[in-house]
Amino acid sequence: MNGKTYRIGQIVPSSNTTMETEIPAMLNAHALTHGTRFTFHSSRMRMKTVSKDELAAMDAESDRCALELSDARVDVLGYACLVAIMSMGKSYHRVSQERLHARTRENDAPAPVITSAGALVDALQVLKARRIALVAPYMKPLTRIVIEYIEHEGVQVIDWRALEIPNNLDVGRHDPARLPGIVAGMNTSEADVVVLSACVQMPSLPAIAEVEAMTGKPVVTAAAATTYAKLKALGLRRSVPGAGALLSGAF
Image (cartoon, rainbow, N blue to C red; front, top):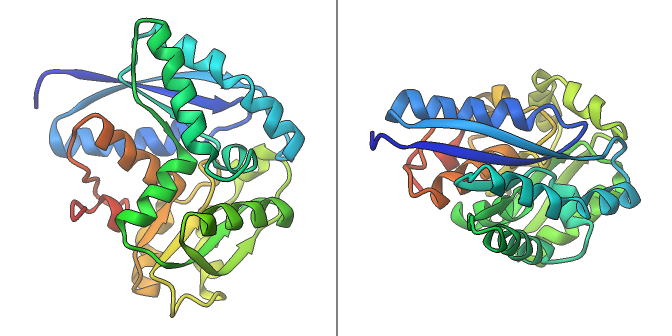
C-alpha cells in the first residue's frame, strides 16, 4: 500500500446504473486484496434509448464531462458507453480518448482517459484473441456495428447474440444469471475468448466465473476490460479476484 487514494472519474450515460456498481465492486475487491484505496466520481451525459442518433448526441456531451471531472483532479477517467464510441466510426475510441485527454490537459489537470470500447479492443489483444464469441444487449443493427468495429481491429467474431433491449434502464435490469444459458446455446468451441457483455451497462460480473468454468475459455466483459485498463493507467497490479482471466494477475 502506497498511502495514495486514487480518484476514479466516470463519464456515464444518464440512464446507466451498472458502471457505478460493477467497476467499483472490482476496484473495491482490488483494495481488499492489495490495500489500495479508491473514490469514485461521476459526470453524466443524457441518454435513455440505445439508438444511433441518441448515442451521437450523448457523445457530444463527453467534453463537458471530462472538464467537470478534471475539476475534481481525478487520476483517471473512464468513458462508459462502448456502443456510443463504436457507432461513431471505426477507430473512434482513439479519437475520443485523445480529445478528452486534451480537455483535462487544458484544465491543468491532465489525466489518462479510458473508453470501454478501447479497453475491450485492447483486452482482446492482451488475451491474444483472434476469434471470439460475443453477447450484447443491443438491437441487431447496433450489434453488427460493434462486430464490424471489433473485426476492423483484427479479431473475428465467430458467433454472437443480440438481446435486443432498446431501453437502457432495461439493459441494466437484465439478470446476469441468464447469461450462462445464453452462452450455452452459442458456438464457443473455436473461440479464443468469450465476450460475455459487450456493454458496461449489462450486468455480467456474477456470471464470469461460471461461464469460464462452463466453456473452458477466458471470459471478458466491457466492465472487466475497463477496470483492467484503469489499473494499468494507474500503474497498479491488474489482479482482481473473481473477475475472470484478464484480471487473474496473469496479464
